[in-house]
Image 1 (tube, rainbow over the protein chains, first blue to last red):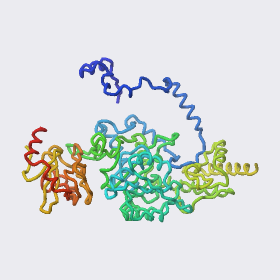
Image 2 (image 1 turned 60 degrees about the horizontal axis):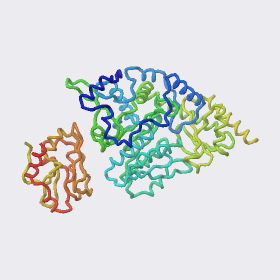
Image 3 (image 1 turned 90 degrees about the vertical axis):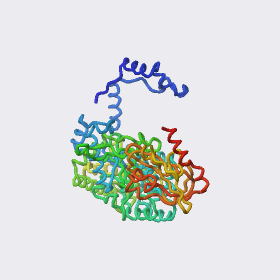
Image 4 (image 1 turned 135 degrees about the vertical axis):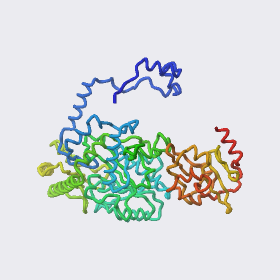
Length: 457
Length: 130
C-alpha cells in the first residue's frame, strides 16, 4: 500500500473546511506547559548511510559467538523458505491491517496461526499473538482475574521456577493494576515448584496459579498435581510453555483432569531469529468459555452473503475501539510479521519435524551436561527430568569463567547469581539442535582449560 | 414507540425493576434499550451472592455493534443471574420484560424501589432523549 502524505494544499483545504486557522489550532486544548518546542537530548538526524554504518558496527559487537544460552530465547535452525516467504510483498506486514477484511490473505494466515497454536497447546482458541512471552504472562494474569469471577482476591501464586524476567514484567504491568503475585519456593533438589508450599495456601481465595513447563531451569514440573490442586481450590491455572517442547510434552490443555485455563508463552523458538533480543512474539490460548476475557485480536472464519468462505476480525467488543477503558487489554494489534514467520515455520516442519527438533534439543543438552559434568568441580544442580536446559554449578564464581569463555568466542551460559543467589556459583546452559558434538567438545575443552589455568594460578 | 409496562420501575440508564411477591426484585433492560443495542450475541450476568451497590455496573450486554454495561438500579445481594441467557442472549431482544430478565436481587431496602422512576416518568425521559 502506497504512503501518500498530504500536500500543503491538502492541509490548507482541510483546515479551511473545518474553520481552523492553522495546525496548531487543532491542539490548542493542550495546556502550553505540557507542550515542548523541541526534543532535547536527541542528537541531530543521521543519513541512511550513517545509520547503516552505525547499525553494522553495533551488530558486529555481538560477533558470532558459539552460544550456549537459552533462558527464554532459543537459537534454532530456521529453514531458508521461512523468511523468504515471510518477506514477500504480499504478506510483509508488521500488524493486523486497518480495514482488516480487505486483506483476506493476511486474515487467513492469522487464522491458520491461531489454529496451529490452539492445536499445539491443546486449547480451544488462540488470539492473533501478543508482544512477547513476558507480556503474554502479564496479560494472562489480568485475564485470569476477569475470568475467575468466583475469586475476589486478585492473588496469583507464582513459583520462583517461572522465568524471573516474566515475573518482573508481570509485576510491572499487572502489579500496577492491583494484582498481587505471591512467590512460591522451588525444591532445591529438583528445581521444581514445592507442592507442600502450594498446599499451605489451601482454603485461601486464590485467583490463579502460574506454572512454567519446562520451567526456567529446564526442569519438568509435576503439572498434573499442580493443575488439579489449583482447580480444587477454585483457582485458574496459567501455563507458560515453550511451544517447541509441546511437540513432545503433553500440551497444557491436557494437564491434570481438566486441562489449564490459559496457556501462554514466547513464540520466538518457532522461526524467529535471536536478533539481539527481539522483536519476538507472545502467544495466548484459552478455552472457549473464557474467550470474551481474552486480550488481543481474534480472526474468525465466516461466510459472505453468497455463502462463500471468508475471514473476519471477530469478538471485537472486547477491544479498545469499542469497549474503551473497559477493554480486555490495551493491545489491539499483533506481532504480524513474527507470527507469519512462525506459521510458515510450523507449516514447513509439520508435527513430525517439530518433534525431531525437540528430540534433537534434548539429546544435545544431554550430551552437553555429560561433557560439562565430567570436568572436576562441575555438577548439575537439580535431579529429575528436563527438556533442553540445565543448571550447572561451578566451584568458583561464574562471571570470570564466562568472561574467559567469551574471550574465546563462546557464550557459556547465563549467570544465575542475580536472580538465584541461593544456588551459589550457578549458570543456566542450553544446547539446541544447532549445537554439534564438535561445538560441545570445543566448549568443554575450553572450560576445562580455563578452570585448569585458574586452579594453577 | 417502545413498550413501557405500567407495573414496573425504571432507571434513566434503561434498566427495569419488578418487585416479586417475596420482596426480591427482578432486573432487566428495557424494550427501548434492547432495540437501541440491536441483536444481542452475549450477556454476562452477575454471579450469585455478589453484593452490589446502586449504580454499579453488574452485567454486560454485547450486541453485534457494541458492548454496554448494565447498572444495578438498587443496592443489595444478587440472588441469581439468568443462566438461560448464556445459550440464548436473544431472549433479551425477544422478551425484555419476561424471559429476558438479567438478574434477581435482594434489595437492601424496599423503599429504594419506590424512589425509582415510574412508567410515566420513564416514558417522559425517553421522550426527552429522543
